[in-house]
Length: 183
Image 1: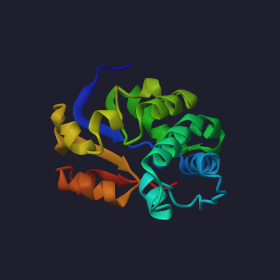
Image 2: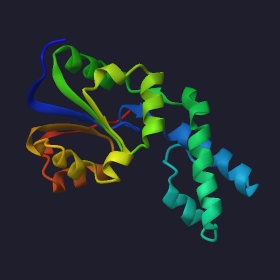
Image 3: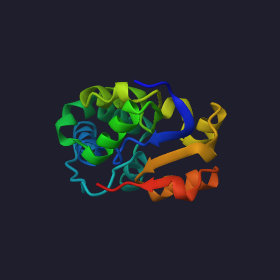
């Protein structure tokens, strides 16, 4: 591998950008809801089921039930890895950037245990110079990146979510350097 060049920093989001995870995420939530609440709940795999949606659908959920569902979902997620899909086009680009010696970062709101497991499952770890997870940035990915000394003007961002792209722009990443990724 060539020495790192810092003119541009190539930043990749994980969920539904580099790896399609909605179905695995939703199946894990459905299993957790069924086990903890005894309710069979079918989740549309075209949308991402989140903690906020869990509370919206079950507004009377006790905090202990909520915590148990989330914890169980995290534990069983790995059993649904076969339901995930690597974005082959983006993976080819990531490998090319890596072999060219360019600086690549995984920046995700996924919790580290799940993200590290997915990176291992798809053999992605070696292609990133740095990896930052939810525990690092606590939901403020771009503020965190800047706090780590990265110049956001030099960031080329690969992202699938409109809200995250707008957040990136608000934090100083140039619109023309945000690549909207779709599977």
